[in-house]
Image (cartoon, rainbow, N blue to C red; front, top):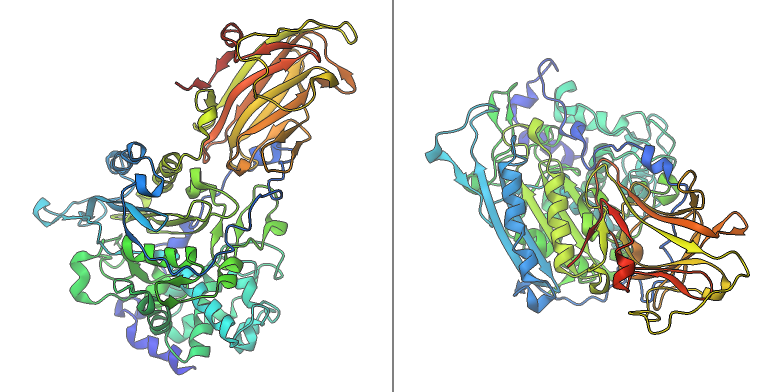
Length: 634
């Protein structure tokens, strides 16, 4: 056994080391759904296709970062492009999570930074409040959460492990296509000889999600052996399964190649160079009063407070590739700013810029498909369930089971950190993602991601499990019958659409959409038989400096490139142009967990080929639009 591995035995908690039976043991923390809860795929399947937003960007890749060395500083919201009035909603979002019954968390700390300026630091609730799962401590023993409270980061620890792996790749000690077994020979057992380092970083190695290492194995060596020799569930590169075991193995690879414990390696090569003095594994006892308590474990009769919550990490001595790191919001922001700085922070170079870009470039879309998970080399990408209003194909990074999350938006150089102890006093209450979404979406609105030009239009799509319709009826002449003009009408001829009216009857829409890909969908339809049947309207979306986006089935979903689009949807049913009384309908359907900014319709025009028969820029025409489930801006 490697000496760097056997040293863990001395760190292992006696209660876990002596456990010989699983009776009464808690289920592994992972089992509750870290990183994301499963979703019903019915709405995903209902989206026949999704527009491709992947091409036509008018700038270089957002993660093609120059090594700036920029460091964080205190800033006013206005100075870094954030609306302070919108950010004032953040304390209320945290407070709502504390006051719901049961509470989503006991205490919380939120930090928002943009353009390297820290614009918000706020804490609420209690780092320590509960004696056990049903009994509170005496009130004089409650400890308020503060902005410098240390939280168990849980699976955000995986990003520290991934960064360590990529440093070893840069120095040539390791390659992404190395078989893991070439460094840890026992890993080859069970037919895993072809599983590579990249497979484990992207959770495509075919490994199971987790094992009960803490409950089913008596000591550290047997737990490590079980993690490494586990039988795979699928061939490598064929399925995405979020696996703690893969990161445990990568942590052991770091130890083997560096000759250091993972905690020592991370301290020497990441946290110390970055000045992250309050980020660590196994925090010392003197810091306990500043550490947020986590769960009361009935089996052990103790409240987890001051050591890692994850059972497997605890059973490995508190240091593992998948969990174990403690930090404050401000320290974690330094780590995030390093990525935005192309791998540099101040004078410290942690990674090369190209390595950062590789880490934040998706590697699994071909496996997971439209609306599926996205992963880089460690970071989680395009994670609607907590990136929410900040979601894009480039947004990262990770969540943690204890109620933590780190979001980095490279499009605006924005960092959003939410640290909570959502499992205090029990994981049964844990439901942090609603607050995560609220925080991220609030920041998105403060950044002005929704274009001002559409904010006075109709808006829908920010409520769960709803169907909202926006409809209007128009009279269209038969083909070849001609039509008059309406020159001089209010607002006519100024913006509001694309396409050539001479091509036939067309719906022209001024749109902004930000909808969870394939789960929340805006459908453009028309009916020529008084609503008995509806035909989807294929069309095209255009915006300045962007390649046109085809919408072949009239369904719009996805992040929309944060652009205001002009859509042209010819009014045809099959090959025939519609005529007579035609009803137009925009239907926005959301699934059980809405995670985007929704959709805005700023202006609706319908042309019969020669004139506008409907234009909502005209006051009288706006009155003909029926909105059910849509609200109109002011």
